[in-house]
Image (spheres, rainbow, N blue to C red):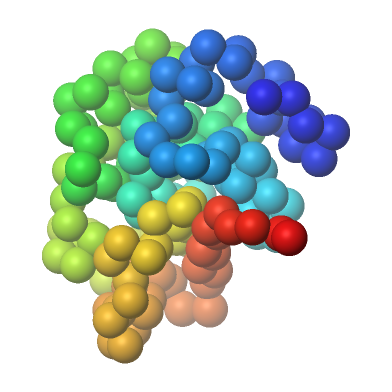
Length: 151
């Protein structure tokens, strides 16, 4: 759970990480990697789409001070709320149970949208990115990270 390439993620307790993982890759490593490329400032509104057990959402709140809408279809918003409360970030992470193809947000609401290792489950339709982009303010950032083999 410790990586020289991910110093922020390495500060999190391994038991918490293992209890929160919902896929094969470390959401913290992917979120930290994306965070280096994004402009994230405290108070910005971020959609964490396909957040799983909200680990990436908690990380974004703690490390960047952004407000995060932790949105997932497969994991309960109530369970994610408990994880968010346990992490002490309920003032800035808001769990949402929603299908990524039918999002309950206003147009141009978010300052950034991220998808950590989940885009392949909902974003493969040719027109999906156009649909998703409407939730972003004009000229703002969207970032997608997925795991894969390097060799």
